[in-house]
Image 1 (tube, rainbow, N blue to C red):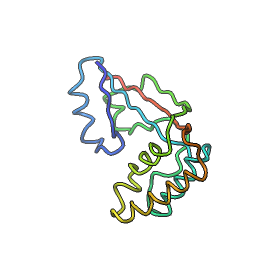
Image 2: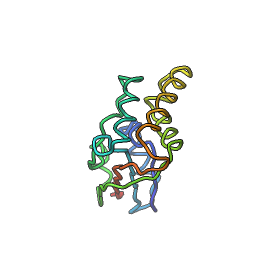
Image 3: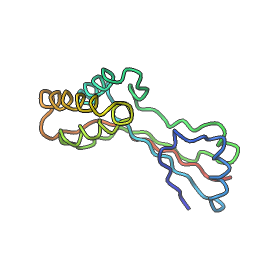
Image 4: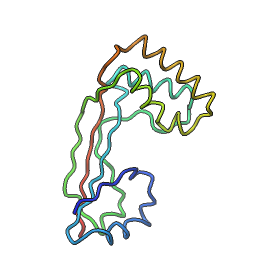
Length: 150
């Protein structure tokens, strides 16, 4: 049986690794998925990220690159890494959907006041009107790691 886990990065792994192990059947698997825009390789992602940092300079989600998923060491006592892969992928957006995606990032939606969000959104939509066609693709890093129960 395969269990898909979202928001993996925010867990208290030392506490949950035993629970994941208990939940899975013998030879069960966990699949950790990750996807992030690539601001250094994609002009629209880079400009949007720069604007997020203007409004939320302490945001720690900036500057992603293609990289393997880091599995915390505590998992290797009860699980083995059986597969991992990282690859670039283009994701299609409209100006409105990309604005919504960026607004949902924790540097904006989870960090700013309603007034700050509105100001950021106005500036972001103007930025997109200036640099992006009505529809476009944004380069992302897609990565996966599969852990098998020992």
